[in-house]
Length: 154
Image (cartoon, rainbow, N blue to C red; front, side, top):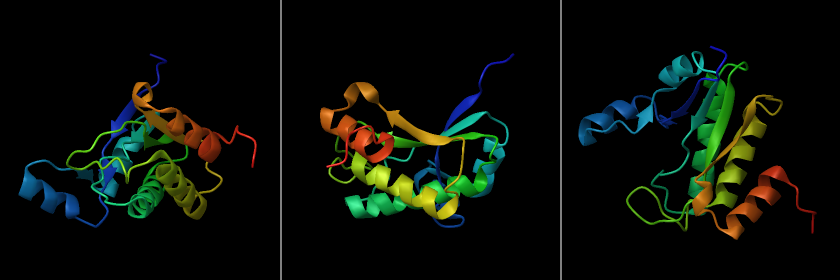
């Protein structure tokens, strides 16, 4: 009673019904439909989109994908629910995650773009840093300069 109910959510289907096709072909539904995401968001206090492990091969494609995910999540999440977009604070190369593409600067640019074009005045919105113990100083600098803006302008 009185506790915050928070959930880490899958990404939202980038194309209508693609989650069904992907799930059938791979046995692992990577995405949630936007409608399902909205149903979950209405039942929790806070929802965080794991906006990494996207299979995007470049920073520009990854940033665009994050912008799209941010917009889709904002559309589906009621303003009374806190919405967080996950930033990739880890470094590895494996299927689905390419370190050279999924960077903190690209993610922050994507989040800012999605927020500005969908709901720039959203109050209960932020980013979630995954995972802080794997972050480099460059990740923290990119976060401070791109999101928190605590660093002085150059």
